Image (tube, rainbow, N blue to C red):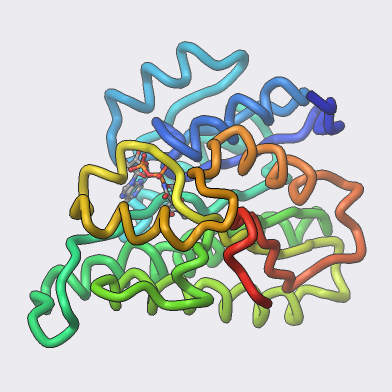
Length: 247
Ligand SMILES: NC(=O)c1ccc[n+]([C@@H]2O[C@H](COP(=O)([O-])OP(=O)(O)OC[C@H]3O[C@@H](n4cnc5c(N)ncnc54)[C@H](O)[C@@H]3O)[C@@H](O)[C@H]2O)c1
């Protein structure tokens, strides 16, 4: 493992109680950062924080700005910073053709996956501006670039995250804050329980490397994007799709 230098940095990782977010939190801790796990699942977050060196857990729902303000205040009081924000919390929602997709489920995916990113950036960017330093990494998806059938809400929300990243990157380009996103192919995590077997088989069939991406592979890319050395990239979309992406 390359030891990316995150010494002394304070990182917020949303949805880090499990899966990709947890792998990112572990990698950050191994690189010297102190991590605040913001997750709606308080029990799992507590367990994860107990197992990651120096990490703390804070109950936060990315759809509820008041919980984010409280989590930020607690992060600042207990750890300082924040220097890094990884917007990772997300759901896929169920798989249906668009004309059969339940409206409430469609809205919930957009509420968590896209508006949640807006809410967290809105909460944290002012603190980064005050210190004129920050690294924001948004976890989008290859679905946001290509569009997966039977996942219109997820594909639309993740395309929105890519657009938000480009917009915010430009807004903050003249400051010390960098904003980028990654677009992973499918990773075998608990999120698979939300999808049909056919959807999972479809996603695997689209990956030229013929395997799922590992959560540690995503964490390695995110660690560099969260580091000071990522200095001249902003508003960028970083591929990690095993050869699936064509742009
Ligand atoms: N696993 C994949 O195949 C894959 C591929 C590309 C992108 N992604 C994206 O990566 C991110 C993480 O996915 P994962 O596979 O680790 O999922 P996961 O289901 O394993 O973990 C998601 C975490 O987010 C938390 N969460 C959900 N809603 C929340 C909310 N409203 N507020 C705060 N926390 C909330 C959950 O409690 C959970 O701990 C998601 O944004 C997902 O869309 C996943």
